[in-house]
Every structure is written in C-alpha cells, then in structure tokens.
Length: 275
Image (cartoon, rainbow, N blue to C red; front, side):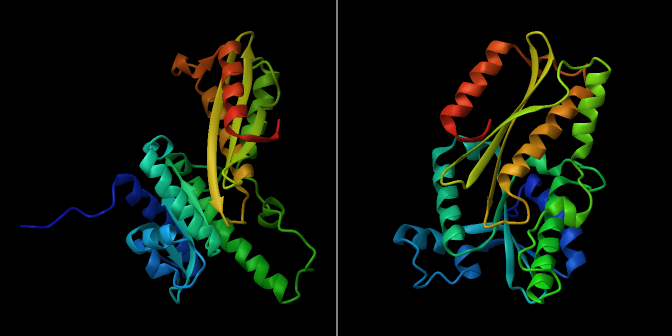
C-alpha cells in the first residue's frame, strides 16, 4: 500500500463543507487543491519570474467557479502558523501578488469564520452569500435596472445586518451595569498596500478591566464586503461573545497598561485608518 492521505486537513474539510452549503444555491461549484497555473493564464501575464515559478508549483485551497467552471473567487484557509512562519508568509505574499495582478478575488479565512452569525450558519456562509448577491447587483446595474451611480451597500441591499446583535447586546449590557461603556472602541488599520486590514476592539468593563479582540482580514479584489469592515464586525462580535460568558477564562481580561501596550503594537504594525 503506497497510498498517501488526502491533501486536506480537518479545518479545510470544514471550510469546504461550509462553502458547499451556499455555492450550490447559485449553481456554483467547488474545487480543492487546484494548481494556480490551471486556474489563471500566467503566460505573458506580466507577473514576475518568481511569481510565475511559484504559480507553476503552488495550488489554491479552494476555487469557487460558476456552473461552467469559470473561476469566481478563491478561499484560502490560514492556520495560525501563517502569521509567524516566515516561509508561509512569503508564500502567501506571492499568492496575494498573483491574484492582485491578475484580478482574481481571494478571501483568506481562519476558524473565526466558522462561527454562527445571526440567521447564517457561519460568517463564511454570510460572506459567500454576499459575493453572489453583489455579482447579481452588478449584473442588474449593467442592464440599466439600477442606476450606475448607485453604490453597493451590502446591508441596505441584503436588508439584514447579522452583526447588529453585538452592538445591541453591548448597549443593553451597559444599561444593566455589566460594562463601563455603551459602545466598543475600535482602531482599524492596514498593511502590505492595504491587502490586509485589522481591527483592535476594546471594551471597558470596569476600572482597569477590559475586554479586547484583534482581528486581521485579507480580501483581495473581493468587493462584496471590505476587509476593513469585515475585521471590525468580527472583532466587535468577539467582544460581545466574551461579555456573554462572564464566568469564562479570566485571562480574557486586560489591565489598562496591557491595553495601552496592545494599542502601541497595533500602531507600529499597521497604518491606522480609523482611531
């Protein structure tokens, strides 16, 4: 027996399962572990020699296509080591560069995207729905049924904001004395030519006691929901969930000095957009 295990791990199988529940509604398909050069025409494409060589060898985690197997967008599942392993970071940069140059939408996700949100089974389900809704919006707009100057504002088009529960919960919690502020404070920043956006969210519980959440998102050529807005929504949602479980791990709480250090580190790593 010389068989090797399948080239997908547990988290990737879950990613594929979540995607499958949504894309099938739009007659779309999912392909996993597809070589980049089999998805994109890289010959004479203008990418660098290094990017070209990488595209010949590397693969995409998941390629979502239409029913005619024309690629729609890419989903990459990033495990924790993608944040600190130098070789993984360099590979991600090459893949990001190729998708950016050749105009292919790419969404990077983590296990946070598996969380249920509102009426949606997961954040990833919600984002996938937004992608296809946005595509329909552009098609209808091109046909003249929607004015060309009308902007895409996802929550007004979809008619439902699944993250609003977190803001409502915080306001109620403040009224009941469970936290020291009625809103979550956020800092939003970007790095790597705005290919990554991050949000540092903080909520004062009481004097010298805070909840925090740092979320980084990457969505290249993915216009259905801006990655900066996405990072903010997830970070605020994380804060609300932590406050809902006050008897949870006490290590979730931070002192004012610790929060100040987090803010300083954030300012050093990202170009701050909203503070």
